[in-house]
Image 1 (cartoon, chains in turn blue, green):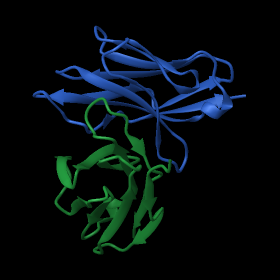
Image 2 (cartoon, helix red, strand yellow):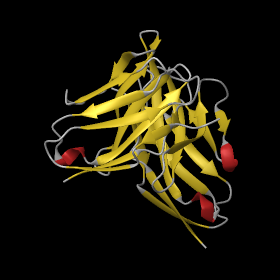
Image 3 (cartoon, chains in turn red, orange):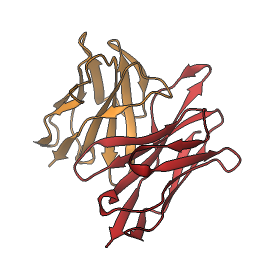
Image 4 (cartoon, one colour):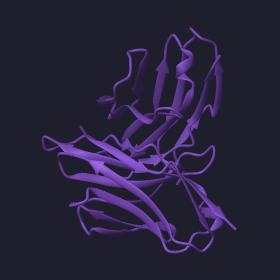
Length: 117
Length: 114
């Protein structure tokens, strides 16, 4: 069965430090992978997505993620954290099944990012 | 371009009642999906509608149902509410759905069952 695992429910970094949020997936078919961000009392906003083109994907607000098939990983990084990056981040996967897209997103449990001044 | 609009934003209901939530997708989007978000279970897929037809369904009891109208607006209904149905319900729209398609989320409806 397809699943997503996010390592670390809480991550704390200092402003200006590297942000690394980890995501591993399990899928028997080629996946599509996404990172979403959620601010308090808000919906989800797409940061970036992998759809089998370049393995290094750049998104909004200087976030990027690298698809590593051998490690079944899609970790999210940002070189320098800002206070405004404090939010909850979700990794998600969708996939093709029997040649037809399933469409629905399977989400990880989320990682809350805190940024210290 | 207006985003995904969900109404109401907040709702308080009593156990045993039923509730209807509404979602207006981005203009031109034909796929609407619904998700339930709780602290314990996280984000879980409920169902997806495309051109007024349910195309995909998650693992929820039959008390959870939905529909989509010809203008792509969607409603979801929960009957015989239970305390465990308290959650943030999120609607997402996309042009045609599908695995690699970007889904745009609304701000959600916060349902509290007392």
